[in-house]
Amino acid sequence: AFINQIKEKPLFCCVCGDLVHMTSEIYANEKLTREECDKIQDDQVRDFQGTWSKLNPDVALVCVCGNHDIGNAPTPTSIERFRMQFGDEYLAFWAKRCYNIVVNTCLFNDASKAPSHFKDQYTWLEERLQYATDKQAQQIFVFGHHPWFLYKEDEDGDTMEGYSTIANETKTVKVPDSYFILPKESRMKVLALFEKFNVSAAFSGHFHQNMVSTTSFGMQMIVTSSLSDVIESTGKPADFDEPNTRGIRVVRVEGGSTASFDHEFISL
Image (cartoon, rainbow, N blue to C red):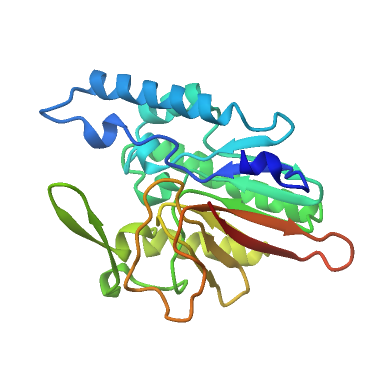
């Protein structure tokens, strides 16, 4: 309802992954069969589609795949299920003079079970970045589920000390910041591409809290909180002042000679 009430109608709305919670790639075990997991996921997909069907039909809905949609190590089967439910898991499109690239970051996390899918996507990503540059896009934005990094582009998961606490009725778990970022080897390779082609910003979710950092070459890594559970990391810089709540992020792009953009997190 809130998005429909924004005075300046958005050109599109992007949900950065984990559209549902259940995936057999994570939860199939001795208690739940793969078929039972798939049935639960199908029910959750219907709930998601029913909720988002209320979005203004003039606002395009972009659905990004997350690890709870296709698994921490996606398979050809889990990827195909996503495609059947939501469409392509990586794609690109223009919004005025901005070129927007959506990637399946789960493959950058672990491509061991779908290596050909990873190779195809990586080749496609290079081609799309080159295309956007050739067509003189004013901004190139990349959307994915996982943050490429949280605080520093060259951060190493093995030395990160921050963690977020997740508690439920039965236990409390400390989840390290390293869980939320992509492996350094694949990250640095992709960031080199982003630098070469002057990517303005990368947007993600997964962290269940807000964080905004900037690379040495000026690209913003913009992580937006969840619409479900929100957690708080001990590793976040003390001067980071965005609220730690559920909400959405509104991005405004200026055209013309300035070709600039800004963004604002709005608590819900």
